[in-house]
Image (cartoon, rainbow, N blue to C red; front, side):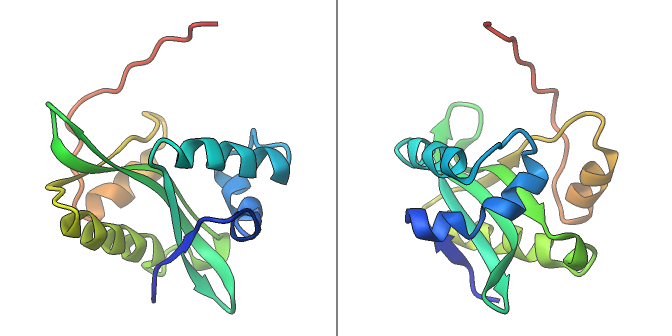
Length: 141
């Protein structure tokens, strides 16, 4: 399947329902589009694979560089529709992103998942990802 990038407000609107499956705190399509546009200014891209003109998997990503990983592709978001889970669609979009990342000189793919999300952890391990550490955060509010 061909990777589609969603850049405009109209294209992003087509992604709201699926992204809300992953990010349940999203309350409105307008909020979603505004946040994606803010993130786009920081290098965020939203890509997906479609069936019958509708996205069935979405992956939000950024091409970044730091001292830990060098040049890398960070996957912010990954979600598939319930009806295609287990069909290799998630693995396919991750591999398509890896191709894009290599074209830009990246040497790693990086992502985070919740410690409690053992199903996602098993999936990432199946498709070649290795857990290297814990991700810590601190709320500032």
